[in-house]
Image 1 (cartoon, protein in one colour):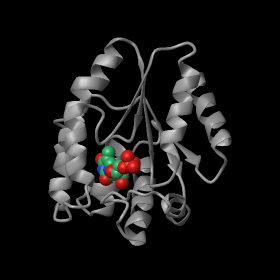
Image 2 (cartoon, rainbow, N blue to C red; image 1 turned 135 degrees about the vertical axis):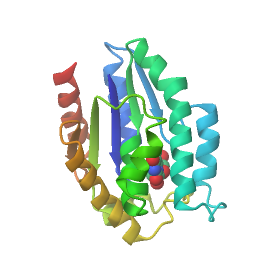
Image 3 (tube, protein in one colour; image 1 turned 60 degrees about the vertical axis):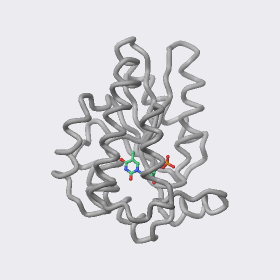
Image 4 (cartoon, rainbow, N blue to C red; image 1 turned 45 degrees about the vertical axis):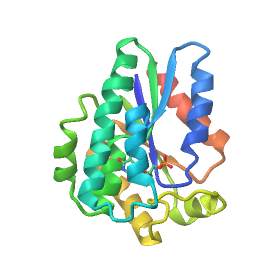
Length: 200
Ligand code: TMP
């Protein structure tokens, strides 16, 4: 089972994924991974995408680099794990490119889906979108000592990302479950585990 987690900044996905993995590992083999990144080569591409020193990365280059890192990550990590019947929990995937690059950057869904057609040979079985007002999310991350290039984007950009996710949800309502991110981590965890267990 291939499960992805989506949302804006500061939605607590990383903590949630660690807790979900800990629970599922009692009975299953679980791989946790993330995008951009998840393998040595894809993490190297992540550094180019997110390093604040590369302010000149254009939206098209950004989308292509994300698709390249995704291609490597799928072939090297996700597909082999799924072949071995492991549960893959992935922090972000294609829907991030649709919300951030297609919608918020304005590249359009067709463009982003076309370039990802080379990379994405397998869509997630299930996706959790943690919906949170960017005002709350950005406040949560304001004390982080490291801000990446996308964290540094404007509030308007992050508002567009949220609108983008709502459009993505309209495209894939059967795959994506929206979770209210303005709840305690334990409440969110309970809802997600119920949904996963109903499908296992
Ligand atoms: P994160 O690991 O802290 O969530 O950071 C990843 C950043 O990269 C986040 O700002 C969202 C962004 N991103 C995209 O813009 N498009 C993508 O396809 C992916 C996977 C991430």
